[in-house]
Length: 470
Image (cartoon, helix red, strand yellow):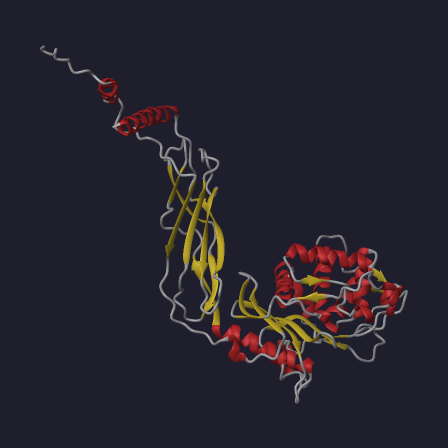
């Protein structure tokens, strides 16, 4: 039997291809009527990230911290503008800070005056607690009246405990209410290894008994936290030197001797016989501390050639030839010299810089959809002197969760760029993030141009669909 020859069947896929081809031919004919100027509006990804090295290898070297042979329990060296830590010896260890505690009292009082809630000329009436406070003091009696400014100077220059308590009670109603403010501020500032029991730094047992806190938790603060607090002081209250550079101050007209600033390292002391051995160029603050439990401490700050540094030394002990109160200044000199001799501030990126790989962003409905972007500010790092910069990286992130649509004003934030730099000898890189902003206005296109773009988008999507089929 002869089998009947079957005609080849046309598959559904072949039918689909023929249909698509017909549609394609028709659309190509339509497309010929669209002007050549029509372009599909560019689309951006949800988040664009690029990382590129932007400088050459560093060749500088700096001495090790160990070579300083510091006689301290802990130490920190910070550049306050960037927050960079240049030296760290047990910096996160909570230790008794003694009168360095008063830096927080100084900050809060100065801040309240700045806010207008108090005036430097407001009169404070001394209460019982302040009159009974011992240690370094100016012998205030209950009922005495002095201005906030006078008491503040006594606290900042003479480290007067009674003046400090008088200010705390005047501001908050009681010292313990003020202590709550201190601990709240410490939390806000990110001081993670700090607890305040009073406004002065005295051991709880040395406070007037009836005014001691309910618990026996003593004041502690790490060197890192002391530097953070000092950073807030010099940043938020740049006029701090109005008080911290006073070399001596006569509190009352009847006082036979003036109080002398416990900071022997003040630059102005270079002409004072007893202190010239400690005087340090550029030194203008901040606060000393000493108790038997804490040993001797000092948070200092100095500025040279446009660079300010903050140093903290804690737990210095007496040597065979020098008292502990003097050792803290010798150790501070080592720490400060380490910073000023080996580091400098260097601008690595100028303001309004274009970042490679992220020169433009797409702005929908704009006349020109590709709008140039630049950094909103410059970037500076503290680097070893003479460094060409090493391992500096630029990481760009364009946030596209909400589409950019014209019109947009020049200066509109469209993302960020994070610059990171690995300091030789440091475990972690330092980073600074700045905004990416539009470098010019993005005006909205007219209706006809938008219409043509819409047609272009339609055919772009169509061709992409066809391409995927084949």
